[in-house]
Amino acid sequence: MLIHLPEVLSPELVLQLRHALDQAGPAWVDGRVTAGYQGAPVKLNQQIDEHSAVAHECQRVIASALERNPLFISAALPNVLYPPMFNRYGEGMGFGHHVDGGIRLHPHNGSKLRTDISATLFLSEPDTYDGGELLIDDTYGTHRAKLPAGDMVLYPSTSLHQVTTVTQGVRVACFTWVQSMVRDDAERTLLFELDNAIQRLNATDADAQARRMLVGNYHNLLRKWSDV
Image (cartoon, rainbow, N blue to C red; front, side, top):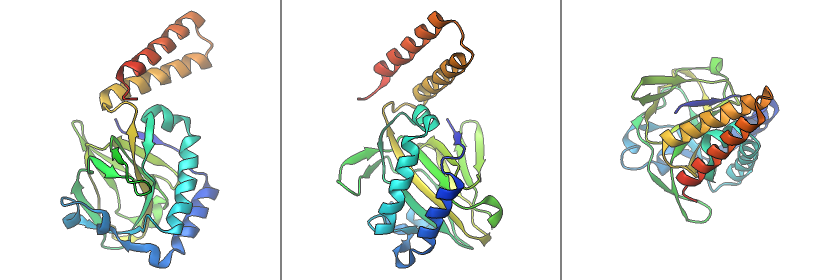
């Protein structure tokens, strides 16, 4: 399931992050330092050293915003969030077709994290660069994402995807992974759609008994499918 989360960050927070990242200097390193065997040959970008002070500062901003975002919580059902990372694509840079690694080591404590969901949070306005589209392939075809600064897209980490070559300007973004409480994408989709239906019924003050039954079904399914 591909999900667009609008306005995860306010314009003020986007400016705050961009100021910190634009002033990061030597904290920007070759993006291939974290690429695996498959990704390294097709990856050409820069990213912030995830152990740097600017990375930790910006990670706190993103994590706090996601904790307060009900759509993210409903869609991702997060169990563990990988500390957000930050990348930059200048002219001629891109990232060819690849699938994200299934397991990552948490950079702060060394624990293993299963990557169920991949996330990209755009930090550059789409009219400030040419190219740089996120292309995500699934059974229904290729989906394109080039969103306003502050918006995020979520998609299954099993998806084949790429970032097209930037031909003008600079594309700056945040990316991360989620280990969900529900690892199966189809099951997460059903729970997300059920939760959305419940919220709409709540907003219209529909039959209270029916709503209680649906809420009960939601939590019983979550209990059945969750890994925790």
